[in-house]
Image (cartoon, rainbow, N blue to C red):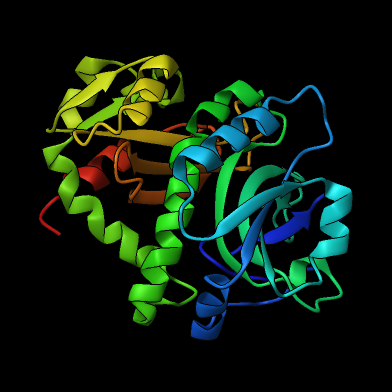
Length: 284
C-alpha cells in the first residue's frame, strides 16, 4: 500500500488503482526543484476550483516554474520527468467496507511510471469528504498550497525527517498552540464540546467560535496569531468513515496537530473532547 503522511490507498483521477508503498528519497526531493510544476485543472465546469487554484498559485508558488494543464494533457505529460504535478484525486482506504471517499491535493513527480499511483508523492493533503460541497474547502486552498510548498522546502533542508511517519515532525508543533488563538467552526465540533463553556472546561488556551469567512480572512491576512481547525469527514453521512482533525497556522501554514478517528456514535464526525485534551498537553 502506498504510504506518505496518511497511509492511504489512492483513487487517482477517476480510476481505482492498487497503490504501492513509497517514501520520497532525497534524490526525488532534489529532482523536484529542477522541474516545472503543472497544475491539473478539473474538467467539471461547475467547480470554482480552477479559478481559485490559478489565483492561489500566482499568490503563493515561488519554488518552481509553474503552468496549468487539462486532465487530458496530464495523461500525456505525466510520463515526463521534467515535470511535477499538483492535482486533486479521490482517496479511499483498503478494506474500508463503507467505501468512504475523500478529495486529496497532491504534489507528485512525473516520470516513466505506467500507473498514476506509481508517481512519487512528495506531499498529499486531505481537502474534504468527496460528497462535501466545494465551499467547505475551497477557501482554504491558499494555505494548503502554502503548506505543500513549505513541506517541499523542509524536506530539502532537513532530509533526515523523510520517513513514512513524517507527521511526527509536525505534531511536535503542538507545544506552540498555547500562544495562538484557535479558530473553530461550531458545526465541526463534537456535541460534547460545541459551546464556549464546554470547550473552556477542557481547553485552557485562547479560542474563538467563528465563521468560514473569518477563517478565510485570517488566511488572507496571514494572521500570525491564528491557528484554525481543518476538519475532513463524511459530514454525518456515514458511520465508520474516518474523520481527520488538523490544526493549521493561518500565517505559516504549519500543521500544529494531526489526528484522525473512526466515526461512531461515541466518536462523532467532528473535533472531539479528546482532541482538545491532546492540544492542552503543551508541555510535551
